[in-house]
Length: 205
Image (cartoon, rainbow, N blue to C red; front, side):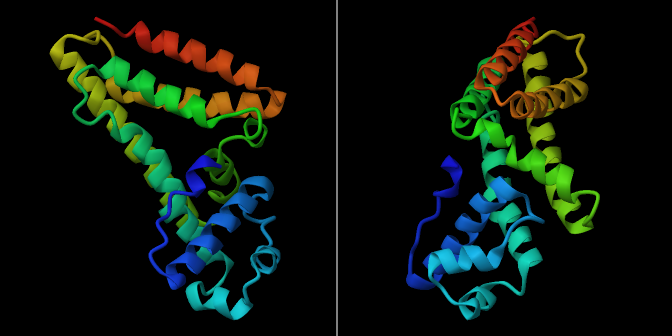
């Protein structure tokens, strides 16, 4: 996962905590949260259980921290580029291309980490659900605000509903991940993203 290595390790204590977060996130992407074995990850890292519990009271607190500190910043930052963008359609397409660039033959088979966690944990844990829903709400708001701005400038058609289009774009992205995961195919991922990009270009006024 490209975005698991963004931490700046300023001292030994932060380095240990960040390693715990990063390696457990990687394992969670492969096995899901419920299939995550923190004891194995800790053992692989060569640290003690005491070091783990120094930072996290248990597996759930670790999971919440992974959402807050790894998943949320990554998925929100990709759409932050829309804020203040003069050419909204180009900025949205750039965001899609960034998603495509992070989705390779090596990782597309596991699907979208955000979507996977939503499917797995939202029905089971309200804290997970609220944290994950906040990510989607923020993405939707960033997209909708950009679309409204594009409508105001005349770049985007006046007859669209920006909130609904924003939801459609997000649904299409997550659906693309799901199809690629099911087909185990990067080609399917790219084909679906190409169609979404074509749709966005058709929003031009």
